Image (cartoon, rainbow, N blue to C red; front, side, top):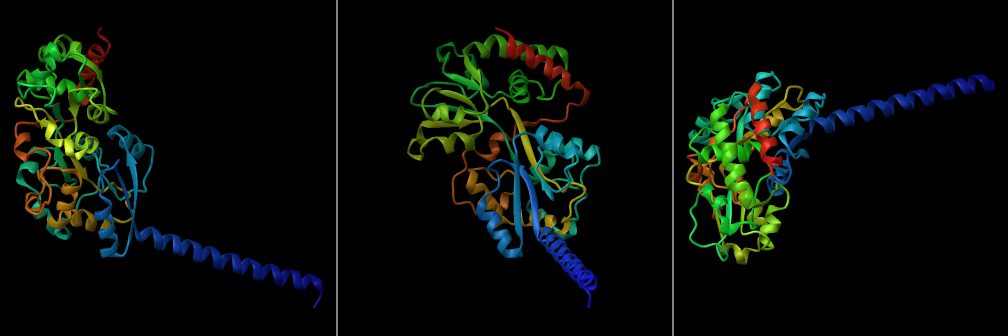
Length: 353
């Protein structure tokens, strides 16, 4: 056999090997993709023990990416990201995505544990009360934490931020919807009001009564600053406060949802259109609401059983606040074209001296 024929045979063998390797590579990649559930969730919002149990029970892998805001989640999906099987948007962005036809309809026949989702959260979830596209993950609210060693004889109300004796010892969230919404609630209005007169009253309350006593608006360090004793009163999330303070000092914390009501949120589990693992995603959502599993989620974060009351019976820790405290709260809805009104008020609040 001449050298030319040998080279041809060698090339054919090499090409065949390359084809075999490529077939194996794409087969394994496809197989792994179908055995992996891709979640896109808020940071530190998915208990590792729950994930481990799901992986073991179903023989799959769960991959988690995190986002820090609804805007980040929404922008990523709009940019064409289609690799996620379950996303966790809050109520206003859930409503937007339902209206934009970005979510798959949920097959309730494969989700028997939805029976444990409380009627109270479904009543609040007016954007999707039948859970056609979104299953509530958690319903909660920001509140106020007070260092009871330093502050005495206070009203459990937003009016605490009006106290001149606490000037320089308080912070509020750096969040437009929270601050304006809470001021609206304090003045007896809906947290979603876009009425110019009501928004003006809310703005005046923050600018004239609250802001002069605040050190800053702060989303990032309020927990650690409260734990360090830098501030005596902070507006924020209970789980952040309690995670920051040493457990032996928890008896010095009074965390409450103000009596006037407040903004509240419902974070949801949704399956975006384009999910490669719809059936596995449905299994995960159903798994989360199994009472013994959801109880682990509640225990991890000290949450009250606002979404799954049956799981509350299995909790091993005392919630940081009670479910009854948010009965007077109102979810932040999608403001649509009126969002600019909140933006205008917020700019005045943030930049008024």
